[in-house]
Amino acid sequence: MATKVITAEDVRKVAHLARLAVDESEIEALTQQLDSILDYVNQLSELDVTDIPPTTRAIEVSNVTRPDVLEPWPNREDLLAIAPDREDDFFRVPKIM
Amino acid sequence: MAKAKSSKRQASKTSKTAKSTQSTSTQQAATIAPEPTPVDPASLTYEAVIGLEIHCQLSTQTKIFSSSSTQFGAPPNTNIDPVCLGLPGTLPVLNEKVLEYAVKAGLALNCQIAPYSKFDRKQYFYPDLPKNYQISQYDLPIAQHGYLEIELVDENGTARRKKIGITRLHMEEDAGKLVHAGSDRLSGSTYSLVDLNRAGVPLVEIVSEPDLRTGQEAAEYAQELRRILRYLGVCDGNMQEGSLRCDVNISVRPVGSNTFGTKVEIKNMNSFSAIQRAIDYEIERQVAAVKAGEAIVQETRLWDEATQQTRTMRVKEGSSDYRYFPEPDLGPIEVSAEQLAAWRADLPELPAQKRHRYETEWGLPPQDARVLTDERGVAEYFEATVAAGAPPKLAANWIMGDITAYLKEQKLAIEALPLKPTELAELIQLIEAATISSKMAKDLLPELLTQGGSPKALVEKKGLSQISDVATLEAMIDEVLAAHPNELEQYRAGKTKLQGFFVGQMMKKTCGRADPKLTNQLLAKKLNASS
Image (cartoon, rainbow over all chains, first blue to last red; front, side):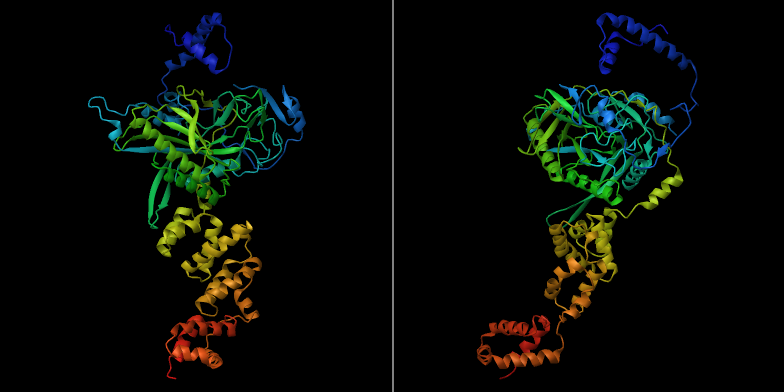
C-alpha cells in the first residue's frame, strides 16, 4: 500500500488526545512511522473473512466475576504516601484549568 | 453473536457513545425557517424534544472491580485500593452482584439482555479519573431497546399513560470527587484535592429515547425509573447522596416537524421538581430564542436553584473523541438463558403493574394507586391489609392518611410500624361492623400505631365498644329527656335544632360510645313522639 493512511494532522490530533507533547520537527517522522505500522497491519485485509466471526479477544474465557464481599485494603496510608503530592487525607493535584 | 455489532463501532467512533449518534446526526440542522418559503418563526407553535441520561449507583457492598466499600460519607480516601486507584499491575474483576443488578434493571425496563456483552475503555483526562480512562460499555451494552410506562394524573384525577423508550442500559465505574481549594468553583482555585472513595463505585447509565415532551413527563419518567430500581432493591435512588443523577438533553422544534433542533444539555438538578422546573425554564428560553430568530448554541448548561434559571457551563466544540476500545483486562459477559430465567423469576411485581391492578381489580382512583405504589413497602402493607379482609378503599384511606402522617412525623419506614396489616384490617372491620365508630377508631390509633396489637382486644380492654343495642339506647334517651324537661319543651315548641344538644348529652353519658347514627334515629323518634 503506497497511499498514505495517516496525515500529519492525524498525528497532531492523536498526540493532543493522548496529551503527548510532540515537537513540530518530529511530526514528519512520526507520520511515516505510524503510516508504516498501519500499512503492516493492513496486510490482514488481504484475507477474505466474510464467514469468520470477529475475535473480540484472544482468550476464550467469559463471566469471570467475584462475590460481593468486603475486603478493605489494609494499608491506606501506603496508598496515600506513594502519591506525588497530598494534603492530609487528599491527593493534591495542580490547578486544573 | 457479536458479529454484526462489533463492526458498528467503527462507524460511530467520533460520537460520545453509540446512543448519541442518532441524535447528533439528526440534530445538526438548526435552521428553523425552511429555505424555499421563509416562514416567520414567531408564528409557529413549538414542542420540546427531551431525553434523559440517568446514572444510578448500584446497592452493592463493594466496588465494581475491587473489594473496597461503597459506603457514602466516609472520610476522604478511606475506601481505596490499588485497583480503583489504577496502580500499575493491578487487574479489575467484575463484581457478580453488579451484573445481576444490571440485568435485573434491564429486565424490569423491558430491555433485551445482550447474550454477549463486554466492557470498553473510555479515554479522557481529568484528575477524578486515576487511570485516565473509565471502564464503561460502548457498543455491546448489557441491555437495550426497552421502555417504561409513566402515568400522569391531571387535576380531575384522570390518568394518562405513555410509554417512554429506553435506548440502552450499561454498566460502568464512577469517578472520584474533586474539591477545589480556595474556591467553590474550578476557576479561581490554585490547586485541587482528590477524594477517590467514589472511584470504582458501580453505576448503570440508563439512556431514554427522546420521547419526552414536557418537564412534567421528564420528572415522572425519572421518578418511575427510581421507583422501579427501588422495588428491585438495586439502587437506593438517593439524589442528595448522588445515588441517582440526571442529565437532560433538550431541543425545541415546530410542532409537526420531524427533524430535531439544536440540542442543549442540562446538569445539576438535585430533585425531581428541579428537573421539571429546569426543563420548563429551558423550553421557554429556547422557544423565545427561535421565535426571535436566534440560533440555539449547542452547549452544556447548569440549573441554578437560587435563580431558578439555567446558565452556560461550557460550549461544546464538536463531539468529544473518547477513543473507546475493548477493555483487555476484563473478559466478555455471556448471560445464559438459564441464568436470565432465574433472574427474571426474582423480579417483584413492578409499580406500573400494581397501579393497573389497583385501578382495575379494586377500583381505586388513579391518584390513590399512585400514592400507594410509590414505595414497595407501602404497597405490600396495603395489599396485606386487603388480603386480611379490609375493603381496599378504606384500607387505602387509612394508609394514605393517618398512617402516612405518623410515619412521616416519626421518620419511620412502614416496615418498622408496630401496627401490622392484619391489625389495621381488624380495626377497619370493627368500624365496618359498627362495633366502634370512626371517631373511636381515630382515638385508638395513637396507641395502636406506637404499640401495635389487636384493636379488638384494645377495645374490649378499654370497654370502648360502641353501644348499638336499641333497648339500651332507648332507656338512656329516656333518662336524658327526663333530665332536661326545659329543652324538651323548647324542642317540641319548634326549636328542632336542639336535637344536637340531646345527641351531645347522649355522647357525654356514654363517653362517646353511643352509635351516632342509631342514636340520632332513636332520638328523633322519641323527640317527635306526641307529648
